[in-house]
Image (tube, rainbow, N blue to C red; front, side):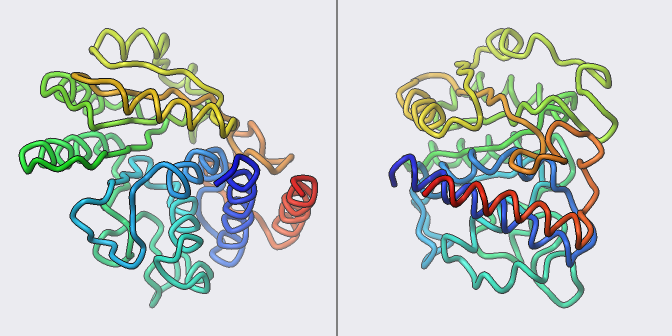
Length: 276
Protein backbone atom coordinates (compact mmCIF):
# COMPACT_ATOMS: atom_id res chain seq x y z
CA UNK A 1 0.00 0.00 0.00
CA UNK A 2 1.03 3.61 -0.49
CA UNK A 3 1.49 6.01 2.40
CA UNK A 4 -1.80 7.69 1.59
CA UNK A 5 -3.66 4.37 1.46
CA UNK A 6 -2.28 3.41 4.87
CA UNK A 7 -3.35 6.77 6.31
CA UNK A 8 -6.84 6.11 4.96
CA UNK A 9 -6.86 2.68 6.60
CA UNK A 10 -5.82 4.22 9.93
CA UNK A 11 -8.66 6.73 9.60
CA UNK A 12 -11.17 3.94 8.93
CA UNK A 13 -9.87 2.07 11.97
CA UNK A 14 -10.40 5.16 14.11
CA UNK A 15 -13.95 5.51 12.80
CA UNK A 16 -14.57 1.84 13.57
CA UNK A 17 -13.29 2.31 17.12
CA UNK A 18 -15.80 5.06 17.82
CA UNK A 19 -18.61 3.17 16.08
CA UNK A 20 -17.91 0.11 18.25
CA UNK A 21 -17.65 1.88 21.59
CA UNK A 22 -20.85 3.95 21.39
CA UNK A 23 -23.29 0.99 21.36
CA UNK A 24 -21.06 -0.96 23.76
CA UNK A 25 -21.24 1.91 26.26
CA UNK A 26 -17.89 0.79 27.64
CA UNK A 27 -14.35 0.28 26.47
CA UNK A 28 -11.08 2.11 25.93
CA UNK A 29 -11.00 4.76 23.19
CA UNK A 30 -7.84 6.70 24.10
CA UNK A 31 -5.23 3.97 23.74
CA UNK A 32 -7.05 2.39 20.81
CA UNK A 33 -7.02 5.63 18.82
CA UNK A 34 -3.35 6.30 19.62
CA UNK A 35 -2.33 2.92 18.19
CA UNK A 36 -4.30 3.07 14.92
CA UNK A 37 -1.35 4.04 12.70
CA UNK A 38 0.84 1.37 14.26
CA UNK A 39 -1.75 -1.35 13.76
CA UNK A 40 -2.65 -0.18 10.24
CA UNK A 41 0.95 -0.30 9.06
CA UNK A 42 1.51 -3.70 10.62
CA UNK A 43 -1.60 -5.47 9.34
CA UNK A 44 -1.87 -3.80 5.95
CA UNK A 45 1.79 -3.58 4.97
CA UNK A 46 4.40 -5.18 7.19
CA UNK A 47 3.07 -8.48 8.52
CA UNK A 48 2.98 -11.73 6.55
CA UNK A 49 -0.54 -12.97 7.27
CA UNK A 50 -3.41 -14.70 5.48
CA UNK A 51 -6.99 -13.92 6.60
CA UNK A 52 -8.21 -17.02 4.76
CA UNK A 53 -5.94 -19.16 6.93
CA UNK A 54 -5.68 -17.51 10.39
CA UNK A 55 -3.66 -20.42 11.78
CA UNK A 56 -1.14 -20.58 8.93
CA UNK A 57 2.01 -21.94 10.57
CA UNK A 58 4.36 -19.53 8.77
CA UNK A 59 2.42 -16.35 9.48
CA UNK A 60 3.86 -13.45 11.44
CA UNK A 61 2.37 -13.19 14.92
CA UNK A 62 0.89 -10.15 16.69
CA UNK A 63 0.39 -9.85 20.44
CA UNK A 64 -1.67 -6.94 21.75
CA UNK A 65 -0.11 -6.82 25.19
CA UNK A 66 -2.18 -3.74 26.08
CA UNK A 67 -5.27 -5.89 25.63
CA UNK A 68 -7.75 -3.19 26.70
CA UNK A 69 -7.07 -1.55 23.32
CA UNK A 70 -8.89 -4.48 21.68
CA UNK A 71 -11.05 -2.21 19.44
CA UNK A 72 -8.04 -1.20 17.35
CA UNK A 73 -7.16 -4.85 16.76
CA UNK A 74 -10.76 -5.89 16.04
CA UNK A 75 -11.13 -3.16 13.44
CA UNK A 76 -7.92 -4.17 11.68
CA UNK A 77 -8.98 -7.81 11.63
CA UNK A 78 -12.41 -6.99 10.26
CA UNK A 79 -11.05 -4.60 7.64
CA UNK A 80 -8.50 -7.22 6.64
CA UNK A 81 -11.25 -9.83 6.18
CA UNK A 82 -10.84 -12.18 9.15
CA UNK A 83 -14.52 -11.84 10.00
CA UNK A 84 -17.52 -9.75 8.81
CA UNK A 85 -17.36 -6.11 9.74
CA UNK A 86 -20.89 -6.35 11.16
CA UNK A 87 -19.38 -8.23 14.11
CA UNK A 88 -17.83 -4.96 15.32
CA UNK A 89 -21.25 -3.80 16.50
CA UNK A 90 -21.32 -6.68 19.00
CA UNK A 91 -18.33 -5.44 20.99
CA UNK A 92 -18.64 -6.36 24.70
CA UNK A 93 -22.14 -7.73 24.23
CA UNK A 94 -23.36 -11.12 25.46
CA UNK A 95 -23.75 -13.62 22.64
CA UNK A 96 -21.10 -11.97 20.46
CA UNK A 97 -17.46 -12.99 19.99
CA UNK A 98 -15.70 -9.65 20.47
CA UNK A 99 -14.96 -9.45 24.17
CA UNK A 100 -13.53 -6.48 26.01
CA UNK A 101 -10.09 -8.07 25.69
CA UNK A 102 -8.82 -10.31 22.85
CA UNK A 103 -9.63 -14.03 23.06
CA UNK A 104 -7.63 -16.32 20.76
CA UNK A 105 -10.24 -19.08 21.11
CA UNK A 106 -13.16 -16.91 20.03
CA UNK A 107 -11.82 -14.45 17.47
CA UNK A 108 -10.14 -15.35 14.16
CA UNK A 109 -6.80 -13.60 13.77
CA UNK A 110 -6.09 -13.16 17.49
CA UNK A 111 -2.79 -14.90 18.23
CA UNK A 112 -2.82 -14.49 22.01
CA UNK A 113 -5.46 -13.82 24.65
CA UNK A 114 -4.39 -10.70 26.54
CA UNK A 115 -5.65 -8.28 29.12
CA UNK A 116 -3.59 -8.91 32.24
CA UNK A 117 -1.02 -6.21 31.66
CA UNK A 118 2.67 -7.09 31.53
CA UNK A 119 2.33 -10.58 30.09
CA UNK A 120 2.34 -9.96 26.34
CA UNK A 121 6.09 -9.75 25.82
CA UNK A 122 6.57 -13.06 27.63
CA UNK A 123 4.05 -14.69 25.29
CA UNK A 124 5.74 -13.13 22.28
CA UNK A 125 9.10 -14.47 23.46
CA UNK A 126 7.63 -17.97 23.63
CA UNK A 127 6.30 -17.71 20.08
CA UNK A 128 9.63 -16.37 18.83
CA UNK A 129 11.69 -19.04 20.59
CA UNK A 130 9.38 -21.74 19.21
CA UNK A 131 9.91 -20.33 15.74
CA UNK A 132 13.66 -20.54 16.09
CA UNK A 133 13.50 -24.10 17.42
CA UNK A 134 11.23 -25.09 14.55
CA UNK A 135 13.39 -23.40 11.93
CA UNK A 136 10.64 -20.95 10.98
CA UNK A 137 11.33 -17.44 9.72
CA UNK A 138 8.18 -15.74 10.99
CA UNK A 139 8.41 -12.60 13.06
CA UNK A 140 6.56 -11.73 16.27
CA UNK A 141 5.29 -8.21 16.91
CA UNK A 142 4.06 -7.14 20.35
CA UNK A 143 2.34 -3.84 21.17
CA UNK A 144 3.00 -2.53 24.68
CA UNK A 145 1.50 0.39 26.55
CA UNK A 146 3.75 2.92 28.26
CA UNK A 147 1.85 2.54 31.54
CA UNK A 148 2.21 -1.21 31.17
CA UNK A 149 6.00 -1.11 31.17
CA UNK A 150 5.92 -0.31 34.88
CA UNK A 151 5.12 -4.02 35.30
CA UNK A 152 8.10 -6.06 36.47
CA UNK A 153 7.28 -8.98 34.19
CA UNK A 154 7.96 -6.76 31.16
CA UNK A 155 11.57 -6.36 32.27
CA UNK A 156 12.00 -10.05 33.04
CA UNK A 157 10.76 -10.74 29.53
CA UNK A 158 13.09 -8.07 28.16
CA UNK A 159 16.06 -9.83 29.79
CA UNK A 160 14.94 -13.20 28.45
CA UNK A 161 14.50 -11.93 24.89
CA UNK A 162 18.01 -10.52 24.89
CA UNK A 163 19.45 -13.65 26.56
CA UNK A 164 17.99 -15.91 23.87
CA UNK A 165 18.93 -13.45 21.10
CA UNK A 166 15.35 -13.25 19.84
CA UNK A 167 15.95 -11.06 16.82
CA UNK A 168 12.59 -12.24 15.47
CA UNK A 169 10.82 -10.21 18.19
CA UNK A 170 9.88 -6.59 17.54
CA UNK A 171 8.15 -4.72 20.35
CA UNK A 172 6.32 -1.47 19.67
CA UNK A 173 5.73 0.83 22.62
CA UNK A 174 2.65 3.06 22.28
CA UNK A 175 4.23 6.00 24.06
CA UNK A 176 1.26 8.32 24.57
CA UNK A 177 2.27 9.47 28.04
CA UNK A 178 -1.04 8.74 29.77
CA UNK A 179 -2.64 5.86 31.63
CA UNK A 180 -5.86 5.38 33.58
CA UNK A 181 -4.70 7.41 36.60
CA UNK A 182 -2.98 10.21 34.71
CA UNK A 183 0.43 10.95 33.26
CA UNK A 184 2.76 7.94 33.25
CA UNK A 185 5.62 10.11 34.47
CA UNK A 186 3.57 10.98 37.56
CA UNK A 187 2.09 7.54 38.27
CA UNK A 188 5.31 5.57 37.80
CA UNK A 189 7.98 7.04 35.59
CA UNK A 190 9.86 4.68 33.28
CA UNK A 191 12.17 7.41 32.04
CA UNK A 192 14.64 7.29 30.46
CA UNK A 193 12.93 4.63 28.35
CA UNK A 194 15.35 4.32 25.45
CA UNK A 195 18.33 4.03 27.76
CA UNK A 196 16.62 1.36 29.84
CA UNK A 197 15.88 -0.84 26.82
CA UNK A 198 19.42 -0.38 25.53
CA UNK A 199 20.73 -1.42 28.94
CA UNK A 200 18.67 -4.60 28.57
CA UNK A 201 20.55 -5.22 25.28
CA UNK A 202 17.72 -4.32 22.89
CA UNK A 203 18.07 -2.43 19.63
CA UNK A 204 16.08 0.79 20.12
CA UNK A 205 14.37 2.86 17.44
CA UNK A 206 12.49 6.07 18.30
CA UNK A 207 9.82 7.40 15.93
CA UNK A 208 6.68 9.49 15.62
CA UNK A 209 3.98 6.84 16.04
CA UNK A 210 1.62 8.69 13.70
CA UNK A 211 4.15 8.98 10.85
CA UNK A 212 3.38 6.09 8.52
CA UNK A 213 6.65 6.28 6.61
CA UNK A 214 8.68 6.48 9.83
CA UNK A 215 6.92 3.38 11.17
CA UNK A 216 7.58 1.42 7.99
CA UNK A 217 11.24 2.44 8.07
CA UNK A 218 11.45 1.35 11.70
CA UNK A 219 10.02 -2.09 10.88
CA UNK A 220 12.53 -2.44 8.05
CA UNK A 221 15.40 -1.47 10.35
CA UNK A 222 14.29 -3.93 13.02
CA UNK A 223 14.13 -6.71 10.44
CA UNK A 224 17.81 -6.18 9.61
CA UNK A 225 18.99 -6.40 13.23
CA UNK A 226 20.57 -9.75 14.08
CA UNK A 227 21.38 -11.26 17.47
CA UNK A 228 19.12 -9.08 19.59
CA UNK A 229 15.44 -8.06 19.80
CA UNK A 230 14.25 -4.63 18.73
CA UNK A 231 11.86 -2.13 20.27
CA UNK A 232 10.24 0.77 18.47
CA UNK A 233 9.37 3.57 20.89
CA UNK A 234 6.52 5.25 19.04
CA UNK A 235 5.57 8.70 20.38
CA UNK A 236 1.81 9.02 20.06
CA UNK A 237 -1.14 11.11 21.20
CA UNK A 238 -3.78 9.43 23.32
CA UNK A 239 -7.18 9.81 21.61
CA UNK A 240 -5.50 10.77 18.32
CA UNK A 241 -7.93 12.07 15.68
CA UNK A 242 -10.71 13.21 18.00
CA UNK A 243 -10.13 16.73 19.28
CA UNK A 244 -11.87 16.44 22.64
CA UNK A 245 -10.19 13.11 23.41
CA UNK A 246 -6.63 14.00 22.46
CA UNK A 247 -4.13 13.96 25.33
CA UNK A 248 -6.89 13.48 27.92
CA UNK A 249 -6.41 10.72 30.50
CA UNK A 250 -10.15 10.73 31.18
CA UNK A 251 -10.72 8.99 27.86
CA UNK A 252 -8.59 6.01 28.81
CA UNK A 253 -11.55 3.82 29.72
CA UNK A 254 -14.74 5.81 29.06
CA UNK A 255 -16.91 5.23 26.01
CA UNK A 256 -18.35 8.26 24.21
CA UNK A 257 -22.06 9.04 24.39
CA UNK A 258 -24.16 9.00 21.24
CA UNK A 259 -23.69 12.75 20.85
CA UNK A 260 -19.95 12.57 21.50
CA UNK A 261 -19.68 9.68 19.07
CA UNK A 262 -21.39 11.71 16.37
CA UNK A 263 -18.97 14.59 16.94
CA UNK A 264 -15.97 12.25 16.87
CA UNK A 265 -17.12 10.60 13.65
CA UNK A 266 -17.75 14.00 12.07
CA UNK A 267 -14.15 15.01 12.76
CA UNK A 268 -12.73 11.71 11.48
CA UNK A 269 -14.85 11.84 8.32
CA UNK A 270 -13.63 15.37 7.68
CA UNK A 271 -10.07 14.08 8.02
CA UNK A 272 -10.88 11.31 5.53
CA UNK A 273 -12.09 13.90 3.03
CA UNK A 274 -8.89 15.91 3.50
CA UNK A 275 -6.86 12.77 2.82
CA UNK A 276 -8.57 12.60 -0.58
